[in-house]
Each structure stands twice: as C-alpha cells, then as structure tokens.
Length: 146
View 1 (tube, rainbow, N blue to C red):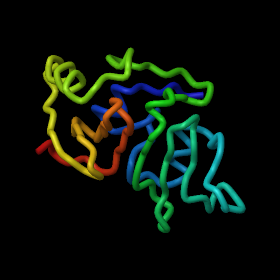
View 2 (view 1 turned 45 degrees about the vertical axis):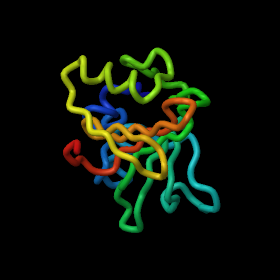
View 3 (view 1 turned 90 degrees about the horizontal axis):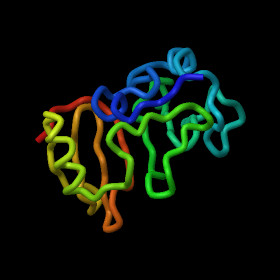
View 4 (view 1 turned 120 degrees about the vertical axis):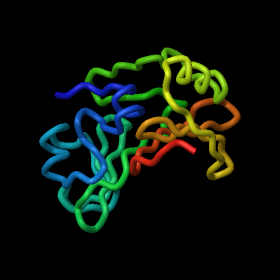
C-alpha cells in the first residue's frame, strides 16, 4: 500500500503517484484498488469516485481523473490504513497561519475566494478555509498562483 504525503499532494499535485489526467488503470497501478467507490455505481470500474480513506479520486466520463479531493480535513485526514505524512500540517491551521508557513518555505502562494471561502493556491492544490480553519484540499489542474 502506498503512503500519502500532503507535501506531494499540495506542492506536486499527486496522491501516492496518482495525478489528474491519469486513467483508472494508472491510478490503480499507483494506489491499488479503492477502499470504497461512488454511491450508486454497480462496479468499481464505472464509479465516478474512488475513495482511499477519505481522499477521493474523481473520474470523468472518459475514465480520466479530473480531480483529487478531500473535504474531511476538519474531521481528520484518513489515508485508509496507509501512511500519511502530514508535512507542516501538524495542526489544522487557519488561512493566515497556513499562508505564512507556506511562504516561509519559499513557496508561491495565491489568495483567492471561491464558494464564499478563503482559498490558498499553492503548487498543484487549492486549500479552502472556512471560519473554523482549513476545510478542503482540491487538486484539479496545475495553474499558476494568482
């Protein structure tokens, strides 16, 4: 079983080697079979979402991964029995503290507002923050920080 690294997900845009744009076979090659798959799907190979712990791999109709997602940050990140390297996230920081920590590492950090939430864009990821702190990790496609 492949371990997960928040640094690799946030900075490099991959989860255990699985990236946006990969097909199901490539994702399975990196992560193995999913722990769970999308509601209503009759078989894993037609499910729109594969879950590894509470990390989600989302597939489009062309069977390519279009998003890596986790909206369970507040509940605690779960790698489904795999190792999880929290990197600098030893606590659930707020927006400003997270931005300061990332910039101190020399990373370029963009600040956005989406879904009425404050967002940090760094590397391959967007980190969404609500009033309680960090809430969501989303990787769709690499785009430069704004």
